[in-house]
Image (cartoon, rainbow, N blue to C red; front, top):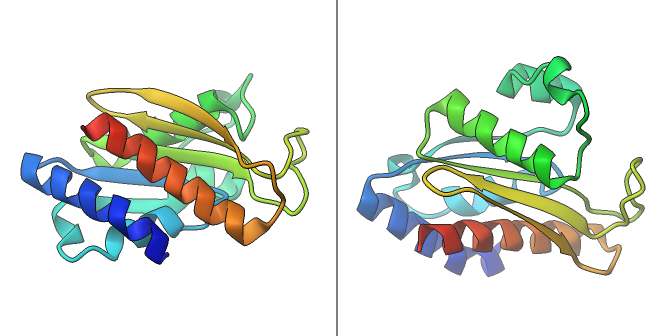
Length: 159
């Protein structure tokens, strides 16, 4: 997690200075994004909450996303990451939402995406999505790379 801290600290500083807040919905990073943001002292000023949305039950129970909202969508896509970010942002009434969905490995996912594939989204005053491919299948390394990519995307949109 130490490698995530410089980005998390810069994000925290910007959010605190502007009086803005953040909500996170992550899947294959398993909470690393939230952990990095919460490791910064004073996180309660900007971090409203986050969830690891790893199952349908979590998606509905934590974010209120119904099966009807999923028609035509699948995990590990930019539209799905955007749905996660928007739902987290709205559910927690945050200024910003950050969504992540991917395949950490060592195998790909059931949709045919290779290990190392992740889709990210930022919502709020600015919206953006991004797909990243690490090109390797080492689960823990992909989780860290995905978390770093998500923090970097958020940081760019806070600038």
